[in-house]
Length: 250
Image (cartoon, rainbow, N blue to C red; front, side, top):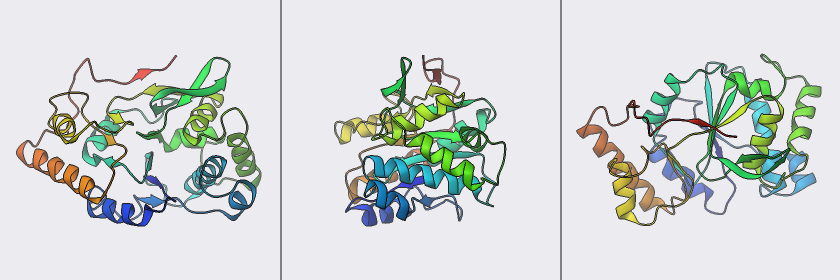
């Protein structure tokens, strides 16, 4: 899981994440987005183009890592709650070799009547397809390939939006964008709606909540997720529901 950080609240947010949904992750499963001097000099801090550049350089580091025992990569902001067990169950059912990336398509402009991913709820991609985005089948990522990959990310249109730009580059390299329900990119209206979604009384079974506003909300969501899981061992399972499935974006 690549965690995008950099706001004034990031330190406390990361602490809350490590105390809640990331507490059961193995070493190396949670990666805090690393800074990059070249991105900082050329594009400024981790906002707008600066964040797009940082994400691209972190993807190179992940592709080039000797820790190759992962199949999927999730990219989220540091104000999100991830339902790790349900997401893992979903990923176990997906084909990592299918040329696709999963998120919420429909935002921005990639040219040729295409759109990229919308921000908020995150997106995920297999290691195989992340390498495909750089034109590779496996590591190592040579410096020339890394440079071309980052330059591709930093092209227009919409390079100011890293979510959109990720979707644009993915499509340029032959991947489809697939709409994945359960990625709640917009904030829930109130605590009652939050409870109803977690209790599976409305909406789609949650995978990611975005705009978790503070430490208290992060722990409140976590406590309810733990409660639901303890009451119902199948709460995080992916059920065969025709209304809950991934769809290919046009």
